[in-house]
Amino acid sequence: MKGDTIQILIAMVTYMAAVILIGVLYAKRANKNSEEYFLGGRSLGPWVTAMSAEASDMSGWLLMGLPGVAYWCGLADAAWTAIGLAIGTYFNWLLVSKRLRRYSIRANNSITLPEFFSNRFRENKKVIMTLAAAFILIFFTVYASSCFVTCGKLFSALFGGEYVMWLVLGAIFVLVYTILGGFLAESASDFMQAIVMITALSVIVIIGVVKAGGFGSIIDNAREIPGFLEFFGIATPSLDANGVQTVTNGVAQFGSAGSYGILSVASCLAWGLGYFGMPQVLLRFMAIRKEGELKRSRQIAMVWVVISLAVAVFIGIIGRQLFMTGALDAGDELLTKSASENIFIVLSKSFLPPILAGFVMAGILAATISSSDSYLLIAASSLAKNIFQGVVHKKATDKQVMTVSRITLLVLAIVGVVIALDPDSVIFDIVSFAWAGFGATFGPLMLFSLFWKRINRAGAIAGMIGGGAMVFIWKLGIAKLGGVFAIYELLPAFIFSCICIVVFSLITKAPGKEIEEDFEAVRTGNIEA
Image 1 (cartoon, rainbow, N blue to C red):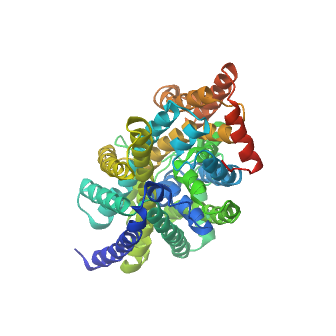
Image 2: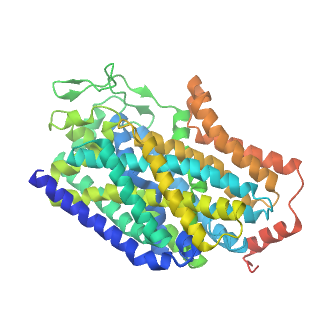
Image 3: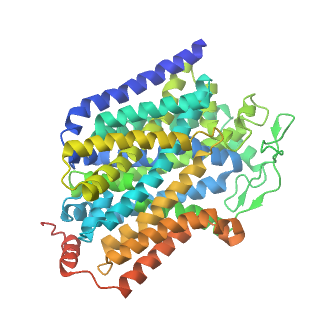
């Protein structure tokens, strides 16, 4: 192993050791009981709530997927997606956070999302709980696989060797860490990782601007590529039969600019709808120690999100100035859509001293860990707490729940690795599907549960099934028709879920008096049971 590579490895191992230490420090408290393990005893402060929510949400997608999209096809796709996410973040914190925190306490002190929905409708037969837990298991397993893809790509790009080997090692590290510390360790380390992520992005974009000859030079270069710097156009890389971009005299080749109409914009903006159904974010709303601290958390979260998204998109733009134009010789690493997601890694290795590059690229590891541990923990809690204890074995002890949870973590990690085995997997594509799944399954249900008194159990069940099923139907079937049907599956699935909720709630019996009293108590702020 070369000296530069050793320095990068040392930096990253140091970072990983710090993350493990956090897990060890919180292990005793985390194992006290299931509420501490899964929700941290509702003890998060505003800074940790905000930063851990956003870090666990963004994942390696922020440092690899989003810059890769901007690098590959220009501004439009990446920028409109970032705008949609920023808008969704704001309204989720503004509309959902306070009322969900309040309602989760009123709903028998619910500590998981399936438990909240089930208690919200006071169901005896735990159909809502089982369905919600099942959807979480499905989509979070897909989500976790995207994080494992990030680990595989990162370490194979840095240290060589087989992608699959690094994929498995990364998954083992995340699994051990998650088993150790639970929700509190996850949230505390996510706070640290959010700082690492935004610092890494900022360092690379500043150095990249300098190396590229300034902001003006970057913009001038981007304008020379048809559609690359347009909000309503998109660049189209010229590809050979193997999907590899053609290069002539050291310059990447592009075809004519593609059209980017209102439906494409709507598809990207629809990403913002996903926030209303994201368990890893919603749980932070439930876990904050005081409702009054949510306003401060919202402000912190918005600053972090806007800066991080803008910088991530710009890194992709900078990459096209520095690579694939003859300026440097690293362009052959970025000739496919999948490989373009390595642009952040290539920039870090090219322009930073090895030891600093290691710490900066720990930002990718930070993003990956902060998300995958959240995904695995929430999925495990859904099966152990909601299906095992809530349905199968109602008298299960906390110790038994914790045991089932850890077994579930292992199984989910294995399945996630299997899904991620293809080294040509595109992180952005995997994340977009799982994001749509959560957004359509839980987003409409969450909004109606919090703000519409007339929603009932039948409407809730119909909304979940309709939204979740439509994601698969649209993605795997309808979207293939092309044209207007090629819109991002989250938008039609979200709308269909809303329709299902309203229709089935209105044609079936109105909710009972106790459920309406719960709703009014939460609306007025009187949440005492």
